Amino acid sequence: MTIEDKMIVLSEILDVEGMLKVSGIHESNHMPHQFTVSQKHLDYANSKSDGVLTEDILEKYKCAVGTCKLKYSEHTADSQLVLQLKRDAKETDVHSELKKLKH
Image (cartoon, rainbow, N blue to C red):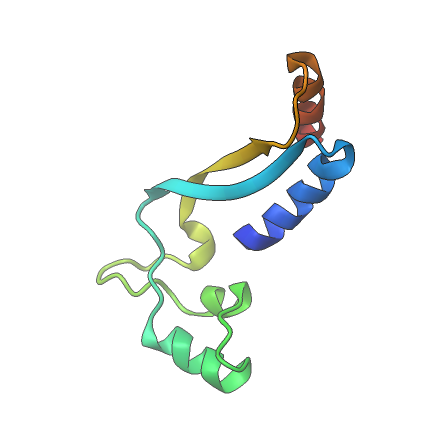
């Protein structure tokens, strides 16, 4: 699932009360490093999906970093969810909204 897809899903969960807005999702602590797209990825995307790099295409070829032999799904990162408070709210109400993300 892309970051954009995650943002849409989280927005649908949190926007019910009109209290919180999902402003972004940031990734850090990439392990072993950030996945690097190769020319093979780009060529395949151009020939099969109008240049759109889908997760399936990223998974098809290994990382382009010199000695790395890992697939896209084998590269990980920590994610931070950035939220914006849209209106005044009690701390307990915000906490209740955030609990919805546990499910």
